[in-house]
Image (cartoon, each protein chain N blue to C red):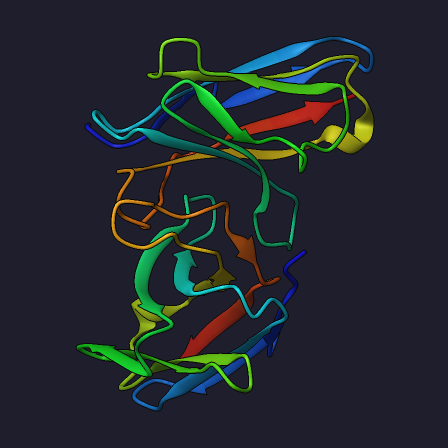
Length: 117
Length: 113
């Protein structure tokens, strides 16, 4: 089955700096890669996702890149703010594409992002 | 609130007892997923439904775990003969079938004494 590795487990950056979290996956059939943010005691919330037919996707201060050959994808957060402090999870899944939806997600172990004021 | 809801939010039980959790997905979402999350870990996929059909159940942790979605709306997850190792957060998520985005509920936190 799929295995997702995530690094680092903890990341501390100064407010205003950039943060990068990296993940690798093992199953070449995986083609859907979401990122979730989870604040303490709260539910995971989707912040961005990417499909394997795209190499990069950006939404304001957040971007995700995907390297299918290397089975590697990364989350980039620029101009970090205190409210970015949380645990971030990457995940991988197989999507059947239009009309098919996605299977269950395999998550990484999470990165605790700390934004230092 | 039109998001995914779960009940109860907290459950304390004694070892050996059976427990049942309920998940109500977002209206019109035909896919429903169950995950387990232990402290310091990412959610672990257990099973999922499309309407009332359970499409994947090989990832359920043992035969003590079972899930149902009898009318294709809400779902229940039952754990029989609970063990201390079952203590965790049980999360439910739903999605609109043709789209991949899964929306999570607030979870049910289980403590087995």
